[in-house]
Amino acid sequence: MKRTIKKSEYQWLKKELDFFEKEGSIQAAQKEELLGHYKITGDSNFIRILLTVGAFLIGIGMLSFIASNWMYMSKTVKFLLIIISVIGVNGVGLKIENHNPKMARTLFYIGFLFYGAGIFLIGQMFNLGGSFRNAFLVWALGGLPIAYVLKDKLLLIFITALLFIYQMNYVFDGETSLPYIMLVILPIMYLISKHIHYSVPYIFFMNILTIQFAILLAFTFIDYDSPIAVLAILFIFLIGIAMLFIPVREKLKGIFEIQGHLIHGVSGIILTFGYFWRNSLFGESFYIVFSLAYLVLVLFFIKRGSLLNIMILCTLILRFYIDLSYDFLPKSLVFVIGGAIFIGFGIYIDKQRKKGGKSFAEE
Image (cartoon, rainbow, N blue to C red):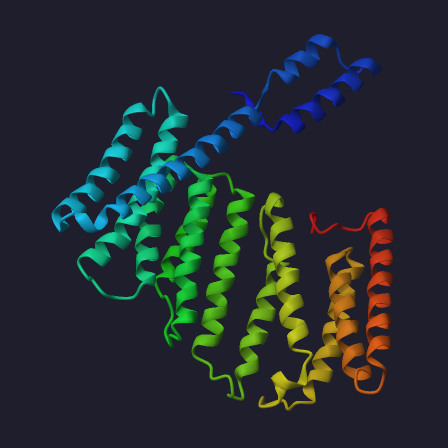
């Protein structure tokens, strides 16, 4: 069975084998035999992009047509139109899947859009009430089995986006409860990643979804004026640190490290402000202790070759520089020196990168 690789990867492999052939390490026949084990996926990916965009435009166009004539239809006609559209498009997709899989996939995308639109339209038509966010949850859950069977990364990423909107509505609605169903959905969706060979983009968005849930968990039940409010930020900070040491597959380490450093960077810098410790059990002055400890941690990560932490260190220095100098230095001088600090760190980062430090893409 041939392995599928990108066109750029195939060209690199061919170039390397050409070099070994010239060196006499392998024969021409061996080179061709090795290249024969691979096939390029670039063309099919381009076709898939075209079909996906086409499916989206067709779906939007048909939904626009239905919406423009919606007021003239009876409830029975509306309901039947939605059901027939979803079943019809998916049915045709199933029928042609064996001999035209790309077109079938396009029809499944259109069917998924119709399904989502149908949820909102039926809710409006029969005045079902309930929270608006539940429509996104039902849409996501309805598409999950299809995405699993099709092993479709794009559809799974779209489902994570729907669940992100679902969770975000808990923030906008000022809820004092959690989307507890996510405690079941998140593990299932991580298990699905094995089914799609641990897709890096999918894991990236899944991590964002999980972090969003963790933030909801941290802040839903804690009063902002409570003495333990700072513990919610510390909880997020520790999640960022934990992501750097979680044992994951080699191909996923870069994603976990980038997201982990960003999380501890943002939450760590927030915790260097005394305001967030003011009502805590530790007292406002504890921010100095935390800042020193965090500085040591950032330097530790820099020593390990993390360029991203140099940016965090730069931000940390700038934060204290502005805090200490803004009140007694001329404002123009504050910004000039601040800019010089950034330029200096930029030059340093570039030198470290050339020496072989981890780039942001490699972290």
